Length: 106
Image 1 (cartoon, rainbow, N blue to C red):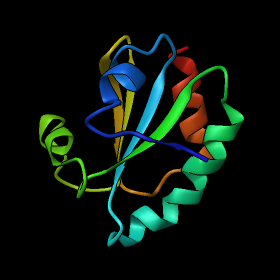
Image 2: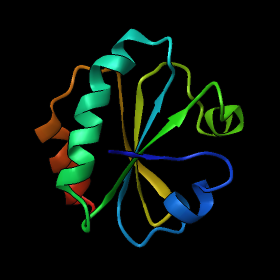
Image 3: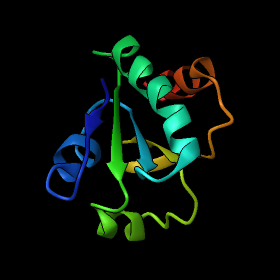
């Protein structure tokens, strides 16, 4: 199961992480977000120990959504060393593609 990131833990869990982090910006009302949600959860288990995978609910963490310029969801941001290294907008992506991109940052 993917971690839940929010304003109170984003700095410690994502920005300060020594591992690459995939952050899924999503919302409860978003159909494509619900489609990719199980993929994100599966990926989280597969990369445990090598990388982190988590979700940010844009309705609950508006400041983070604004900070990272979230205009469309799902928005997948790949972090390494506290910086965004890559991004994918939308749910048209496979678990293997996400895993490959994430582990390439390790």
